[in-house]
Amino acid sequence: MDETISIVLFSGTDDKLQAAATLAAGAAALGKPVKIFLQYWGLNAFRADGIDSDHGLSPEAGEAGKASVEAAAKAGQASWTQTLRMAKELGEVDIQACSASMEILKLKQSDLDSLVDGVEGVAAFYINAGEGQIVFI
Image (cartoon, rainbow, N blue to C red; front, top):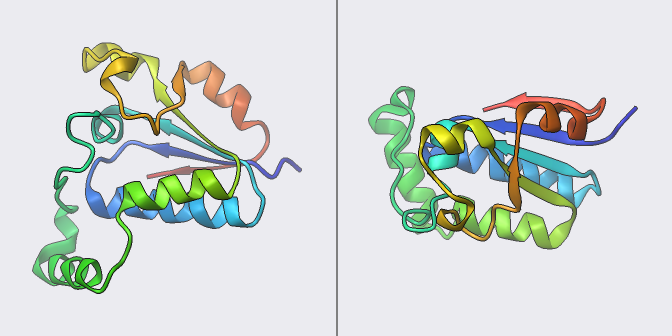
């Protein structure tokens, strides 16, 4: 069975971006190849001019969730961007922007942070995912 972990990152809130980054780092640390496919709001979070901005939290986080996230940041938890950069240093992590989402959001690859390795379509994503697991966030 293919060991690749593929993550479709649709959400652009900081809690979900952190979850995806943590999954990617864990898989990379175990030597598993990771493919991340950025769509819509997940893609929008990777804009070079806003990648370090506050992207908010999911509505279900509520005030308690917000307080927990703020406490973790104060305690030194790495940001999702730092975690993804670390994951790329640890192992094979490939981040691709969805070509259809790029068109809808009127983005060019030059608009994206250097974390993004390229642009591909849905068919290429499925081919590259192989028989490995696909996680949707």
